[in-house]
Amino acid sequence: MLGPMSLTALFDALGDHRDLVGRVAGAARERTANEDPAHDWLHVERVADSVRIIAVAEGADLVVSATAALCHELVSLPKTHPEAHRSAEQCALVASHLLGRLQAPEELAAKVATCIEEHPFSRRLAPSTPESAVLQDADRLDAIGAIGIARCLATSGLLGRPFYSEQDPFCRAREPDDHRWAIDHFYRKLLRIPERLHTAAARRLAEPRIAAMQSWLSALESDLGGTVAEG
Image (spheres, rainbow, N blue to C red):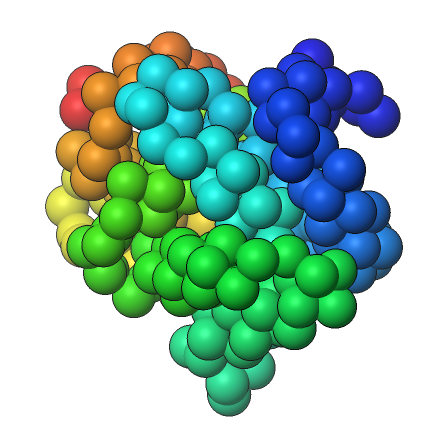
């Protein structure tokens, strides 16, 4: 379920922790309201809902995973920012302060901080807890499928990158360079995400999303006057 009620199922599953996590959600929504479309509150909602599905299926702690999901974009420095590589560390600190202000248990705050510190794809950190694996997988799922295409193109637009290389749009005879072209990001990262997921639940969710991306690439090449190779 999407829209204003998209977290209803999550809150219903939280039991006695619903009030605390609801206050976390309110603070996170306010903080991310004006972020770019790839990292805004709608992204946070989607990740939190995927966390619910994955955590329940995998037996992870839903309170930790959900709280981490709601807090994982409290700090999101632009990719061009000189401190962008430290976004997760700063985000973990802000999340810890928020949870302290809301009088959350210290153990919960520490576990949430660990999930947030480990979650970025760019850091390539192995998750140290089941809850960290859940957040990594949920965040990566939002990078693929129809929404992943939208997020990729939105980010490339913000960075002023063209959609594709005129000479070789689909990286058939060259290495992908996603610093120059948006579609290259599919081949450098996005289509490879399923092999880097940690949970069986997330891999199942990834299958139709990857199929949708491959179908979109086929449609794009048809628009450009050719046919896309499989893979």
